Image (cartoon, rainbow over all chains, first blue to last red; front, side):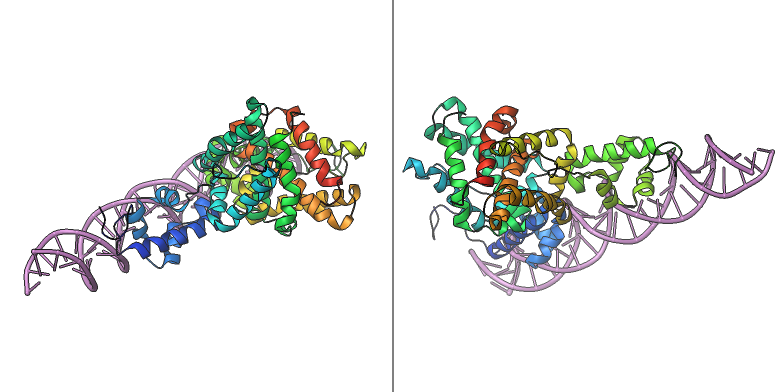
Length: 193
Length: 193
DNA sequence: CGTGTTGGTCAACGCTTGTTGGCAACCGTA
DNA sequence: TACGGTTGCCAACAAGCGTTGACCAACACG
């Protein structure tokens, strides 16, 4: 089907530009949120004309959708040893947040845009709740357990990566795992209090 | 000094209007965030002309500052019995969030505006850290303990009142206290893991 | 070589925003 | 009754936004 590589769009001469736009968009959305991240500013960062953004991504919403796409990949996570899931999950989320600034962007935008909020909610629905059902007792409690885990993880992300409270930024990785790991572990596996 | 009541501004004929503006502003800021809550929309809700907003609150930033002012009142909180602080704190925060929509507004705006973010951070600095110092062991760990408590409480607020995840909204009050109470208790009083 | 396609710029559009100043109506006081 | 201050509305401003279409330059292919 394709001469060079399998399963990808034909290479276009404009690919570097497209990538530059996406990179600039991610950075701006993560730093400023949706409204304050203007197409003009993004174009300036990418060193091209604002109209190019429209040509390649139709409109601002399309640009945001293209710039922010994330899969936390929870289904592939090892759930054994079972008494370590809490710590495993916390570590997993920490690397995820530190490697993808899109997550910060998604959260900044989600605070005011229901569509973006739902993108985050989808992770809870499609990955965290099933995981809670698989791993914990009382499957009918999976919703509640997953909600608590989400609030724990997103709370840390909020204070550390979005609001950037010094006291939260100062925590180091293993310190966080030591404190939050048992919390998540309890939310997932302990009997309903 | 004043004929009617002590320690307050002279009653102005415009007070009802001022109050209507503030109420509308709180509602809009809480629902839409800073940029999407336009002065025109707020004025429309308050059934007055947009220029009145400027007359009474100088500019949009001044309006926001006047509309959102909160004191969580942690210093006055009973810390006894000590093994109940966790649950007491969680209950306190829950009523706080349910009674003041300003808190939702502050968080929506804080997601993109550093000044608003700092207003939330001030609570952590001035009330939560001192409380952690008073109540927990190893005073030099107070920063970390308080940061963890803040992330717990704000995480719940985020998923429940800002992002409005159904699974988080569905939790009921005492269920939350039962799950989060022990978490806060541990963050505040347990020895460093 | 000519010709269609692609990558990119420029200038402008229509609209909304925060903000301003002028002007009319009302009030309490003298 | 006259009058200064308050309360309110109206119309307009400048600036910034997302978005559009005309136009030029470079390339690919016959």
